[in-house]
Image 1 (cartoon, protein in one colour):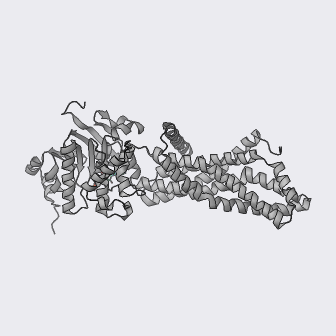
Image 2 (cartoon, rainbow over the protein chains, first blue to last red):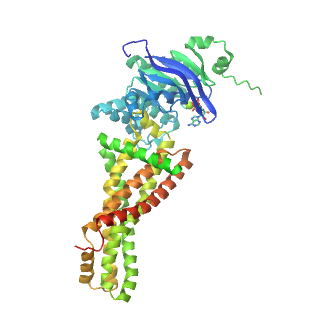
Image 3 (cartoon, chains in turn cyan, purple):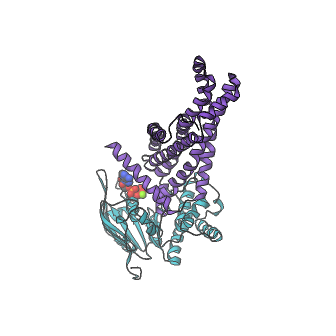
Length: 253
Length: 253
Ligand SMILES: Nc1ncnc2c1ncn2[C@@H]1O[C@H](COP(=O)(O)OP(=O)(O)OP(=O)(O)O)[C@@H](O)[C@H]1O
Ligand SMILES: [Mg+2]
């Protein structure tokens, strides 16, 4: 599988998920190729977070399948998912930092759990990750003492430090100022160039769509409503896509 | 039905715990940390509980035994009661309030703030990381806490009987020694061990299944204490029958 360069790293087929009587995902089909950066945009509350949680096996689909690097994750038991999860990391929308650990310990966590024992290497890689998100001078703070944006960046540091083959970002630059948002965008690009990382990025920031994406998926009403390159997105004549990228709500005052 | 499915969930947790235990990855640093928090930190509570139980029990039995003219045997009845029943049960109840509540609240908070999901994403099974260290720490701490509680109960009994009521020291000690032996203390410690298992499983289960934010954590914490306390009292009854069958009362060495 991995030998074939063009084979998709993640393959989502007819994914359906409902919570109570709310059909959140109603048949998602999406391929993410190895080494590409795919952005997912779409209205708030339409199921973007639910979608990426399925990729890493945090949620189980009602129907359909998710294949990551040749492994069908929705068929595996919790313990058997560990090998796949060592190859994929995720940034949670809310950061999900461990509140009993400092920023530095949070960042070192995936390395230690992956079995890195050399403390010099851990220190070095943690420093690299924290510097990439501009947080190195705050490494001794506990998550409760961080600002919202800092928490997000600490979460990003924890997601990138393991240099996994694939990183899922849930809104990496929401709540960040434009400069830091740009730093994060460049970091995502750099991860792709330097380590060939496959990235799946959920975002509301149209700026980063045109800056970093290879392809864009527009999620609406539980399906992929549009899929294409940023240039195709710009040229799209679909009214819903246009309203979204231009930020029109249709309400007149 | 609800009861059966609850027992089923506890059984699944226990099975996961056994798998984790057998994996050999014990995270001794966390275990040590938990032993300090659970065992070391609970000492004051169980010492005060044991001492005042011993004291008040001596106080009351003395009054009655004096009517029969057998006040010097107070030591014997107090020590048997403390070792076999009061020591482990009261220490267990106190630890469930102190430690069980903390376990349910800690893990529950991690659950509702997605920290448990963050662990899973990094390929770390929550039972391995959160439950196993607490479990090992409890297995080590509980028997010792019970022994400590018993020891201080006996000491308080001695003080009340010998110094308070002027029971001749030699008689008091002779009767105490004649009617109790290490086996009685051992029974107390075995009970402590079982109670430790009950507290850990019930509390961690409530934590891991917490939902609905802070309210859910509060509900889970309350349940953890109530259920583990009741379960302990009920188990204690059957455990007493079993242990008394194996080592009958009244056969001092
Ligand atoms: N565990 C759950 N139980 C019930 N409903 C849920 C659950 N998780 C998500 N939902 C619902 O699914 C829908 C999609 O949620 P999701 O978090 O995926 O939105 P989103 O697209 O990420 O939005 P945003 O851009 O605001 O983050 C929402 O209506 C939400 O209420
Ligand atoms: Mg979301």
